[in-house]
Amino acid sequence: MLAHAEAMLVTAQTKRDGVSLGVSGFLVDLSADGIATSGIPDTGWRPMGRGIVHFDDVRMPASARIGAEGAAFRSVLAGFDFTRPLLALTGIGCAQACVDQTARYVADREAFGAPLASFEGVSFPLAEHSTTLEAARLLCYAALWLRDQQRPHSAEASMSKWYGPLVASAAVKDCLLLHGHYGYAKEFGLEQRLRDVMAVEIADGTAQVQKIVIARERFGRDFLPYRTRPAADR
Image 1 (cartoon, helix red, strand yellow):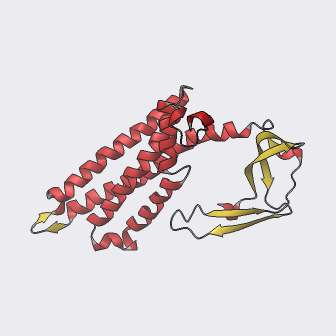
Image 2 (image 1 turned 60 degrees about the horizontal axis):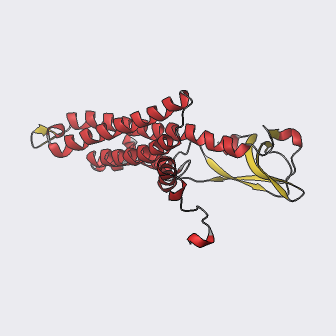
Image 3 (image 1 turned 90 degrees about the vertical axis):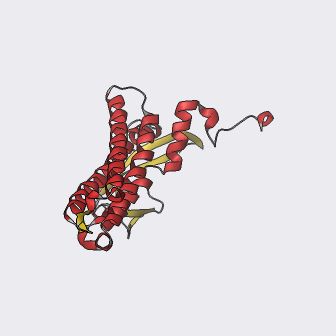
């Protein structure tokens, strides 16, 4: 995506006379002097494409600022509460496609004179993944519903971002294994989906980050690992 972009939104710490004014947002023209970009050869999500942006003494006019000065950080955090469930749903959808594909495959393929689907070692994993994927999907819907109702949903967003990719990755991997050697080949696309869904586990905060947010929202700031305590309490 970066390879085709002409501009990007950048958040940066803003200061005046040595005093921090918070984080501000800017619409940056990537053709500006001092900006260089390079791609990253990722394992998955190759059509999307990621990259690195290098800034070397780049100057932006005040007209490039988006929104009020120093107000971008809160907007970025609010954006996470929206994109985290969406990313989780991306992984869940990928995993659901694998489960559906695998169900058709094991119904058609036979071993010992019976369809693979008739063996509990095959049908039970598909039943389990169908259940966990549905639970993860409903958790995402709950987070998005709360957002639509303009109610707090940071915990639910992080729950969906942690749990959704977790169960999605497990489902895709099992589906690949249930295809046997065929699943490991590029022909069926399962290996590509496994690489893609793993990227969702990283984007917008890893599982560890999501658990920090969940603990903070559910139990208070005493559960933050980076909370600053008075010297007498240390």
